[in-house]
Structure formats: structure tokens, C-alpha cells
Image (tube, rainbow, N blue to C red; front, side):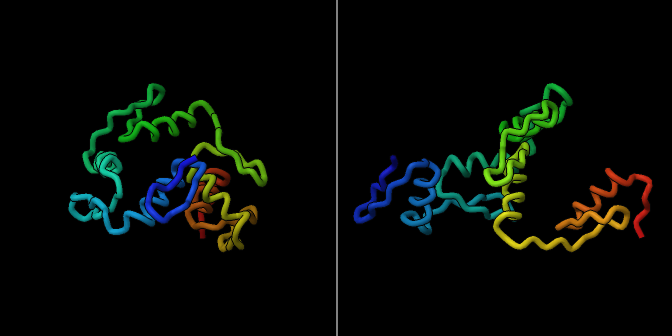
Length: 150
């Protein structure tokens, strides 16, 4: 259990990340470190988070996939990428059982359960419906490679 150390605050958290978010958002308002890279301006409460962020501006990709040679700036990005080779899908929707490789995919999927999804794009060939234009383009390329869109 993580108890907020600030006087007058009695918040208690089970997860460290929730505790850290509380302290940063409630008690450290305005005490941020700003990325000095021109045009970025992203803000961080913790110096080590700013340091980790600065790697994206360096262009250095020190983490390389042994299978295909693709390289990454962050170790966790390589770890997620490796799942494309292993087929591992460690993340699962608690509502319907949908499985995926990365957190962003699960977050996107969860919107289907919490909000009215707008399927504005329909495949001309098979009638399958999609939320995003990029999704229908990808579907058409993979499922109907001989089809030329009108």
C-alpha cells in the first residue's frame, strides 16, 4: 500500500503507478521539467522520465531484433516487436477475451466496450465495416489485393 506523504492528504493506493500519478498531478502541479529539444516542449514531473524521453530525439537505436535486424530506441519497443515473430499475445480483454501484442491495441479495443463505435467505412468488396480509413485501406490490401478502389 502506498500512503500519500503530503500533510492533510489521506489518499492510499495499491498500485505504485496510481500513487505516483496522484503525487504528480495533485501535489507537484507546475513543478515540471520541459524537454529542451526545439519544437518538443513535452513536460515531465520526474527528471528520469525526461532523460528517458530525450532518447527519442537522439536518433540512436541501440536495441536490435536478432530475428529481422530492425532496431529500436527503447528496449520495451523491441520486446513488443519480438512478439510479431513469436506470435505471443500476452494482453487480453477481460470482457470478451480479445488478445493482442501491445497495450495501445488493447486500449483501442476497449473503446468498443465503453462507447458507441462509429463504423463509417464499408468495404466495397465484402461489406465489412471499419472505424478508421487506415483500417479499411489495410483490410483491402490484405483481403482483396487485386481490387482497385473506386
